[in-house]
Length: 309
Ligand SMILES: Cc1cc2nc3c(=O)[nH]c(=O)nc-3n(C[C@H](O)[C@H](O)[C@H](O)COP(=O)(O)O)c2cc1C
Image (cartoon, rainbow, N blue to C red):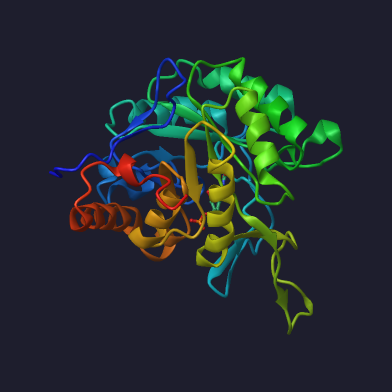
């Protein structure tokens, strides 16, 4: 047991609230539904679990290959392979209802109506503690431009979710924009309880022997240590622009990385790609944060949130 207070409230404006015992979360798409890791590590010690991105219908995902290693990172084009919202509610949520660790469901829609319906279906489901809205998907009704690439479209997606649930709503921002603070401000105005950032950065790799792109989908999303400085800069900017909690994500491998995000203004962090190489990475990060606080004589994590600002 720790003598230090590592807890954080991620949805102070929401009636239900979203209190985490500690600031270490898993990043969507890198930790399945939590159950996959439950036999390897004690998932109940995590601050929160964010499950795989979920759509209205089950999806098979993109053509192979879908994952390739790059310098300091990974490119993926999974394409939102998932079981769909109905199976998630029927098969996954009842398990989560018995867990101590809060589970947040990451959702993805191709239209405002999709976002509205996903939010409505999750509202009141036992075992679901919050919604993370992935706005990095092309808006089919607006000609395929990412919701997250335009402040107005991002706000509209947020409002569609907000109007259909009383659950805490976290909006996950895309880094593939010129000014991420404009999008952050727009989604907060539209009712987001918190923002998380960043999602992957668009990239690609070429196979020299085949003389063609490595990924079946040509373009993929870059994650891992390579993106940390970009993510950190964006967290710093967004934390200075919004009043709601900010969740930092992108290349967190160690406690040091997490503490950098926290000092930049993040109240919590998500660990993603690091888990592929080390399934214990989120717990290593948690233990390292606690050791740092002990060494520095800090009794509450909240004392160092934004310390570098
Ligand atoms: C294989 C893979 C699948 C992902 N799937 C999702 C997803 O379904 N929804 C989402 O919002 N982000 C998804 N992400 C993005 C991560 O949640 C995270 O934002 C990104 O990987 C940066 O963090 P990291 O460098 O710690 O991995 C995925 C990332 C990877 C590598």
